[in-house]
Image (cartoon, rainbow, N blue to C red; front, side, top):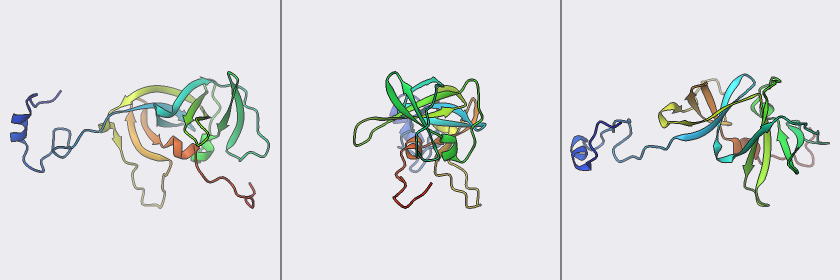
Length: 184
């Protein structure tokens, strides 16, 4: 709850030009909205994604391998008559997934030139969907070691610990398909 009254006139008198609002934002700046995120565990690490791309979460089902698929494509699964490609998110993030009894497939939906496209990933455990307030989100720290985390957009402090916020569209819809002379 704000310490300021609802009347903007007295509030304007309290803030000098360049002053900060109670949330630490410059005067006149709009507070960023909270993020609704799905958090899950993969390789023992907590990750979170914006729910806008999440289509559904389903029980782990049989995944049929695809011949000549890239190493990070696990295969396809049938979801109510629709074939969904399952991508090895752990491999794309440079970690290893641990098999788990409560593993789930998280199905994402993205726009493409040919219409909506769905891709799935296996999560060791889906934790929750929650609102993450702006003050719980911070930049990915600089390690000064040359490490760049292009997959993560930020860190989020959640009830489940510190989660890496992933740019899931960038990770799953990358445009670096192998060329004719690339051998995998």
